[in-house]
Image: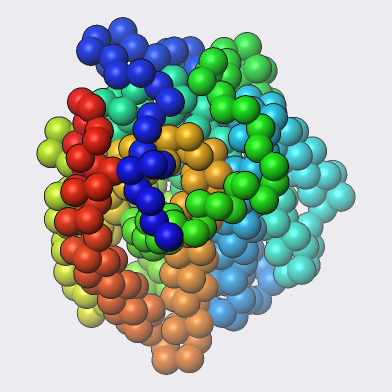
Length: 416
C-alpha cells in the first residue's frame, strides 16, 4: 500500500516569513552542535586507522571492517533513536545518547584498548554517536514548515562537518599522546557540547502524541520509505563510507603520513559538509527530484574515474573533493523531500532513512578493504558503488511522476 496523499500533511504550518524569522534558532544551533561533535567521534577510527593498523599489524580487510563497524552500529541504533524520538522526544533521546558515548569513551581510555577486538568494541560505542542523526534532524525539522525544510535540515545536517575535526586533529593528537589518549581527550568537547545542548535545545510543540510500538513500522508498508532508504544509502552512505576510509586510501595509495592523509581527508569531508545546506536550499527552490537526478549522474561518473586509481595525488584529491561535494549536496536534497512526505512520522523516518545511509556507508568502507585484500586494488569497491548510484537514479526516475501527481501535488509552498 502507498497512500501518499494521506501521509503528506505537514505538522508545522506554512510560514510566509523568511527562514531566519521562522522556527527556533537556539534549537537549530543546538542540533547542529550536537550533530557536529557526535560525527567527530563517530568516524574517529578512520583517521586513526593507519596508526592503529601499524601497531596491531592489521590486514586490509581488518582495517576496512574496523572503520566500518561504527557505521553499521550507528545505522542500527538510528532505528532505536527514531522510535525514542517519537515516544520521549528528541531532546531526551539526544541526552541519553551523549551520556553513553562520553562514558564509553572514558572507559576505553581508562581501561586501555590494546587488541583488535577492543577496537571493534569501541566502534560499537561510537555507533551511539552516529545514531545522533535520528535525533538532530527531527529536533530541528519539527520547528519549521514545509517551505523551509530543505534549509533547516541542511543546516542541522551540516553537523557532519564534525568528520573534518576528526580528520584534522585525531592523527596529530595520536602522534603526540598515543591513540588511546584520543578517546579520553574527545570527552572534553563532548561534555561541553552536552551542557550547551541541554540549555539551548527545546522540543517543538508539534511533537506528535506517542503511538503503540507497532504503529511505527506502519511506514514500512509504504514503498516510498524504502525508496528513501535507498536514495540516502547512496548519498550519505557514500559520504560517511569515504569519510571513514580516505585516510587509509591515501596512506596506502601515496604512502602519506597519517597526519598528511588526515589533512587530505579533512579537505574532502569539509567539501561534502559545506555544501549540504546548499543542496537542501537548492531542492527548496527547484525540487529535490531534479537536484538528486544531477547528483546521482555526477557521483556515478566521478566514482568510475576514481576506480582507475589515479597515480597523481592532485588528480585523486580533486576527484574525491568533487564526489564528496556531490554526495553532500545530495544529502541535503534527500532530506528536503523526506519531511514533505512523512512529516508526522519524521522521527521514525529519520531513523529508517539514516539506517539506509549507515548500511550504505558500512558496505562501502568494508568493501574497499575486502577488495584491496582480494584483488590488490580498491577498484571494484568504487565501481560497484557507482553502479548503486545508477540504480538510485533509475529508482528516482520510476517514482517521480507518481510523487508529483499524488502527495506532492498537495504541498503548499514547497516543491519536490
